[in-house]
Length: 380
Image (tube, rainbow, N blue to C red; front, side, top):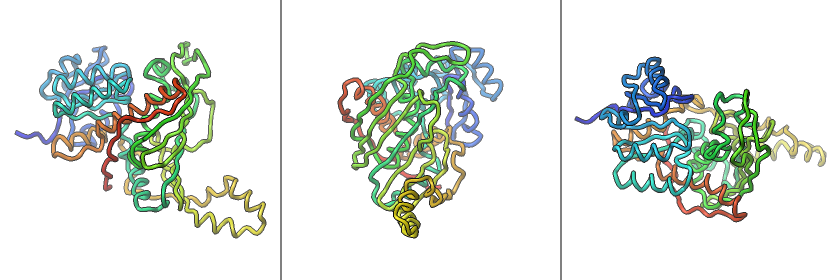
């Protein structure tokens, strides 16, 4: 008998697993959490009791459970590849936190195995499915800002030191602002504008050791990245990612066209909402200023922010984003839908984030080997 609800087993009962428990079942009705596992069984039992998960168990037991259709991996970055392969070899579909793997070769192996065995794999972030970013895509597709020729992405700040209770892994292999944060922005970028063609970047680090609240951690990776991207459609732009900046006022994610510019919701936190400025409005305002130098001063100041218009969206921006990708996967498994959270897109993003370090190490432009389709839009 065909199922109408798929069973999910959560592997990793740490800081973020509850974000999925809030939505899988309560919000997204095509998935129900039936099991959870952790290397610490006390933690698995605690989560199971708090959230009513029927089967707290070991990972091996979870993957052997016939009620589990999708393994949801919410563990540290270094375990993503081995756990994904373990789950696939157990015949499970996989939704895994980002990144897909620590190397492009590992990501490629995941995709090849899943494709050969008829299994679905997808990875966080799924925030590009949110109403705000989908509306931004619609505006661009409809020509609202003209021909797109540029963009900027910025995630720069002091890192997780002041807020994360167990943040040491951010400074180990698999951590850092590129591996941790770039997937949010690159997934949004690729979903809106299409795949990446090439990357060039420099990286460095400000500190060899970091104080993490009550202790000090050795920094093993670069924590400051300045890069340039070229997309296959010719769009170019910069990307800055850093854990070494005390504070900044740079835009998180903006897209520029010949007729206007969009401030997009931050794919990480949805700050800024969705806002649009049109060239004709700026032109009208500027030309109404009689003095030449006053006109220059206006254009170069923060004053034109008054011309940005808030764009309404059919649903609140940032609503229920954890679990959207698993819901998308379930629709594919249950009803044969085309995946928006595609493993080919996850592999492409993984190649890109590992391409940053390759470019930095060689001082050369990195040319992407993979591509992917721009996922179908969502009609909210």
